[in-house]
Length: 78
Image (cartoon, rainbow, N blue to C red; front, top):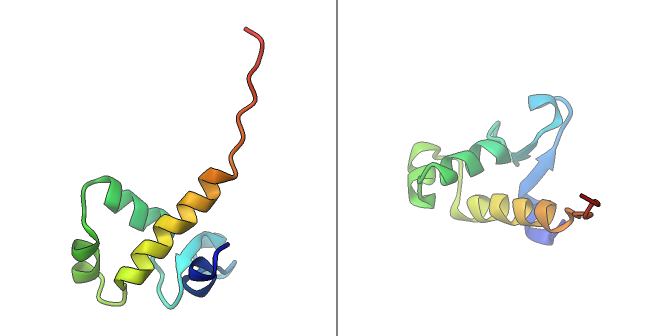
C-alpha cells in the first residue's frame, strides 16, 4: 500500500471481521466507496461522519485503486 493508505487504512481482525477501515473509526473503506458510488461527495461524507477527513476519503479511493490495479484478467478460449 502507498504511504497514504498505510497511514489511514487499517485491517484489524477485531473490527468488522478484518475489513479495511479508516484508522480511528469503524467506517469501512467499502462503506465510504459505496456512498461515493451513490453520489455522495467527500464534503457530504465529512459532514455526516465528523471523524472522517478529506484525506481519509482520498485514502479510501487510493486503497481501492491499489486493489483494482493488482487484478489480473486471463482470457479463456471460447
